[in-house]
Image (cartoon, rainbow, N blue to C red; front, side, top):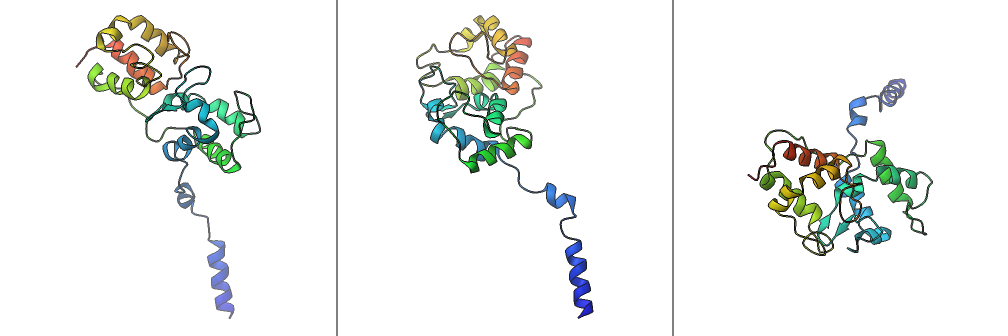
Length: 198
């Protein structure tokens, strides 16, 4: 009996001392856990395609990841006892607050949209995909606003520089934008390389 007790004591005393096991716990996913919270439910004002006062987080099949990522500070205040940044009685469930808190505590990163800007940057390979997924929607470009093709973007180089250097807070002729450093760095490097098309 003493041997069994000794063995149990040894096993219990060695539990959860392995740092690698703790570090291997799954992290909150921006794409799979956070985005669904802010593109549904109480956040519907940000996803109705009106693009009036509310910053748009999604519309139709397009999710504006940059707009969500740029508001980590506002989300942090809200989930830590604050209120909805836009006023009103909109709130998150306790589970939603916990998910967003954990994500912020883990660094508030995008687990699917990060990038390293290097090498040759072209309109066809790098700029057009950003435009298609972030700017092109019925309430934005090619819908209520003008189509931005290659010649137009080359001609509007100075507007793009202002937008990218401000992260979208100035320069855009429509509503204020929130652009990730991945997007701004890609555009600025493309401009720096002379705006090649292909």
